[in-house]
Image (cartoon, rainbow, N blue to C red; front, side):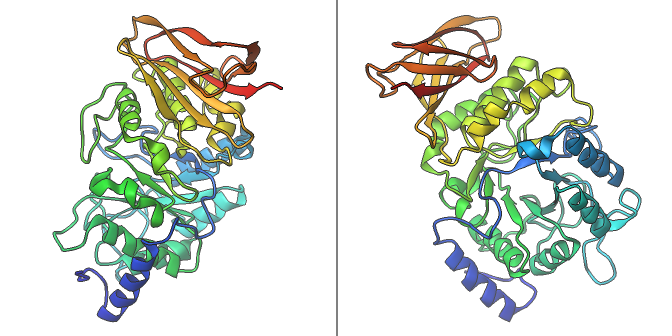
Amino acid sequence: FSFGIMEGASVAVVIVASSFMLWHVQAYNNGVGRLPPMGWNSWCDDSLCNAFGKDPCSEELVKSTADAMVAQGLPAMGYKYVNLDDCWSATTRNATGHLQADPKTFPSGMTALADYVHSKGLFLGLYICAGTVTCKGGRPGSYGNYSLDALTLASWGIDFVKMDHCHIPKSNLTDQELYGLMSHALNATGRPILFSLCNWGLDEVWNWGGSIAQMFRIQTDHLPLWDGPGGSGIGLGSGTGQIIEFMGRLQPSKYIQRYGYLDPDFLMTLYPITMTFINSRTEFSFWCIWSAPLLVDTDIRHMSDEKKTILQNTQAIAINQDELLGAGERIKNETDGGQVWARSLANGDKAIILYNAGRPNTRITVSVTFDELGWTGKSVLVKDIWSNSSSVVTSGLNESLVGHDVKFLRLSMQP
């Protein structure tokens, strides 16, 4: 191993030894993240996802978002994290080498902001970068300062840390080793912090990410598009439809574990113009059946009725937060675009998605028999998550769906 990035050789030895042990445990449990985290992120709120300019986050945005979450009852549904992406820090460290908040946009500082968010019963999250400079904002990265930055974040009362993957100098460290160092540094502070590992799916992160972080990005960034361009990292593209296909090939149930969730990136729920109601509802359905983190990347201060219909659906959230913590698998993939996804739930029910992966102007019938689900000769109570309707069915399911649309169902075997 090479450990040249740490502040001192003796510190490096301790951190590396501890990190090596962390990589060989079953899951990353430091007291938080028992279920997939839910909340909000600033990246695409009030901006074009930073395609032009920088994320315009501010102290006022955080406070107004926290206020709106409480006013709308979102914390009771599980939405508790208020997270800032690459936007919050000054462009230089302070005189003592510590990270510092941008004094223009966060004049009260991060400790005061964390206190405000905590007073609402919520948690505050911040973005850092594994390299020397952040990805979009040109702000200081954490490379060479992992221990120092972990202590700084903990001293402010930060509850969630996302670590990005830009501008990493060449070294002998693998991503597993690099992120393991920050994982250990955060735990060494004594403050339970949820660690979000964002290396864009590189180095087959699904094989090791859950041992050093509660959530780990499995592919390139998600943009508010159905079919999007490729980006840094792996995957089939940045659009919702491409992420769904990538997850189908990955077989996520092989890798998910408690305290270790596959992260397909933020929810782009009803991003203006580019994310329709059907696309947004399909996105939310899949993130729920995968037990993925539900971090909304669009404005939740002024939610339309359509957006509330999606984000406040407690039946969908219950599947995402189900104690069995499964990840839905694609069990049928027809040539016409019809797909069936399924996962088991803790009480013996099954969550099912019938999905038309075809183009928006195509309509097909998607079918599954109960024999294919392992429930031969049974009567089944079928609950439609989105229409909130129920019926008893004895043989199977057949649904006519337009392209991109889903039927999201909860099935209960009857006596």
